[in-house]
Image (tube, rainbow, N blue to C red):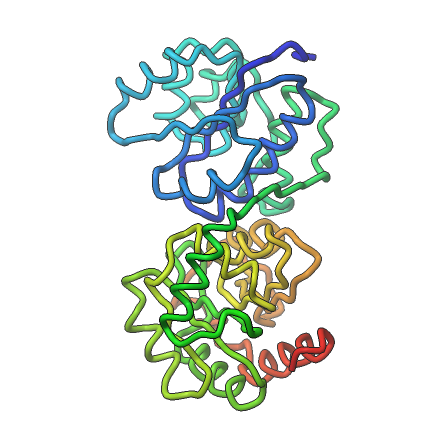
Length: 344
């Protein structure tokens, strides 16, 4: 089915983690179609991560709100097919008006008539992982694609590693010695473990483990990272220090990454680094759908005895349930992992 396709567009224009979990689609298409060229349409902010995937042949940027220019750009490329992994009316309409012959998307939206190949699988129930749901859409192009064969193909250039090492060492980190990364920030897509909890965790780990702790984040999170670092020994505030590619190099070099449900935990998992994550029990943002896709992980979910269909916020009797995740329990399990790796 559709085995003669030569030029395919994969559309994912949202956040870093979403895009990382979409990259296995590109790899699966390269394996399923001989001599196929795969282009990704993305948000410019995630360019660094997509450029690290050698299976992506070309990148286009969605410069909202330029609908007309987007349609023109897509029409000019003469794609054979398009996969819309991030469904919005605007993007579905752009694929339609660009005249792409085969347009694949969800069958459950009011604008699904704009697709001529529909996949009827609900995402909001949270019963499958996002990476698997993405590959289910890809199977509409080729049923031989295995939705359970999730492969992350990310390459980090040696110059990027060198740059990351240089910036780290300028901040006092010895890049040749072992370290772990703590990434406390989040863009608000899920309930998170609090800044106070991360600060307490850093204090315990700095006293108990014998190597460096890097607290990472974006420029706007510098002050938060500084509070989390405190005056603890071997703890370094590197928020705002790295580009996204350099951060990926740091995450790959790290012995372990501790983070909320946010982009860097997915980057680290894709790079085969052990990850420790914090996830709420609410179905739209739980670990079953949005957890790091790896066996090298330890996830903490608050024990409320319920799986919420959505989060009711302060009205919930368990609010904020994420504080039910005990700092000392996290610290002990992290130290156990590091001991098993021969690190602590």
